[in-house]
Amino acid sequence: MNLNTLNYEKKQKIVLIGINRPKYMNALNSEVIAELGQAFDHVAADEDASVVIIHGGEKAFAAGADIKEISNLSTPVEAHRFVSRVHHLFNKIENFEKPVIAAVSGVALGGGCELILSCDIRIAAENAFFGVPEINIGVIPGGGGTQRLPRLIGIGRAKELIYSGIPIDAKEAHRIGLVNKVVPVEELLDSTEAIAAKYANQPAFALKVAKMAVNDGINMDLGSALSYEQRCFELLFSTEDQKEGMRAFIEKRSPVFSGK
Image 1: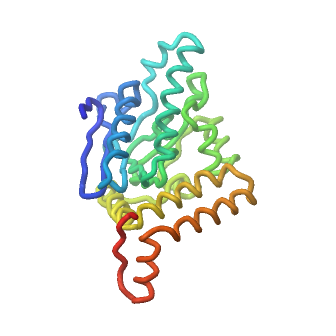
Image 2: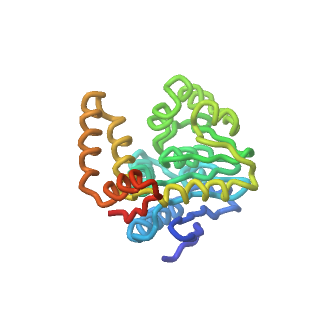
Image 3: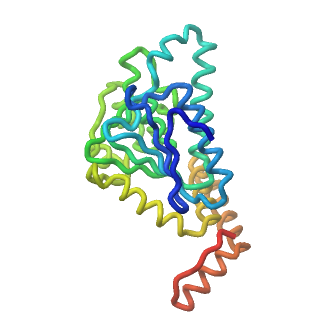
């Protein structure tokens, strides 16, 4: 796998994917989008990989889309082609079968903020800033921001961020539920890897089904979602991990999950 804009590292069952365009504040251009898709396809094919961490550099997770590139989009057709590739990637991440954690240091603006919205968990360093400033250049968030952001933090707060284009710091992002945890800058990757290691030791298929139940159920009416949850719960009684987990609980020992 040849990557020009990303770093790819595997630590036991954890894969770290680092956006690496420091000269451009890790702005997301077409090459980054394509390589992220390639990297996630690689993780999907790796049965020994259980969790993904996406990160950037200390000063920038990702400072949005590459404005020099998208300013050359001169027609709605060209804009459609670009934004469709972005949506395809972010949908892939959101629906990825394995947990995806964003470790955010520095700025996560525009497309960078929308990228973390497609992740399951968001861990922020104390120096992190988040925002969707697209209104300031005459457009709106086009990578899922108008849809995923209100689902995560509520319609009112999402509209405030989208209408104003003003970024917020890590403390405020945590207060409104945009991020799960805030840690010192120097502890960001270690803290995120510790969380990932916990997930990596969970029963993999049950984790996949839990993610599926939440992601799919949130778009259903409550009655349909509850019925869907029941089916997901019932399905897991066909797995070896369910039997091992309950047997270990009764025997008062730690379970040894096989992912089956």
